[in-house]
Image (cartoon, rainbow, N blue to C red; front, side, top):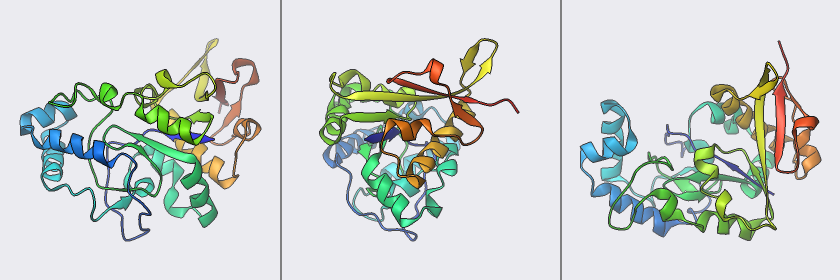
Length: 249
C-alpha cells in the first residue's frame, strides 16, 4: 500500500529537528526544472506562481540561491499548511515515522515524488503551474508517466488522499492491476454529500495520522477512520471510492 498526498505551497527549513535520510528519487528532473526557473525573469516567475509581490520576492530569492544537495529538510517536516498541521508529524513516535516512510508518498510539481525523509529545500511550484521552456511544456507533460511507474514499482494498491491537481499526474497512467482508492470527506447537504476545501485538508491530514498510529495496511483499517466527526458511509462507497461523512453537530 502507498498513500499519496499533496504538498503545501508554504515551506520552511527544519533540519535541526530530524535529519533527512536520502535524496529524492528524481533529482535529475528537479535540476532540469530548477534551471528552467533560473532562466525566468521576476515577472515570468510571478506569473508562474500567481502570487503577491511579497511571495514572489521570497521565492525568486530562493531560486537564485537554491542548492538541491545542502541544508536539506525531511520532506514531511518541510511543508506547512492545514493538512500538515492536522497530520502533526513533529509529534510522531518512531513507529509512526517508520510507517509513513514505507507507505506515504508526497506528490510534488518540483520533485515528482517524495518519501517522507527525502531531503528537500523550500520551493514553490504547483503541479498545474504553467511552466514553459526549452525542456518543459507543462509539468504534467514533463512528468508524464514517471510518477505512476514509480508507484507501480512499489505497490499494487494506492490510497489517494491527494487533490485532483496532483492525483491526475498519476491516475491516467495506472495499469488495471493497480488499484486506486480515493478517500472522500464530505457532509450532507440535502440529498448530496459535498466536500469543503478546508475541512477536506483537515481530514486528509488526520487520516494520515490515523493510519500511522494504527499501522493500517488494509481496506478494513481504512474504513475504520472516525476522527473529526467522520464516519464511513458504506452505501456510497466501493473499492475505488471510500466516502466518509461528517456527522451533524
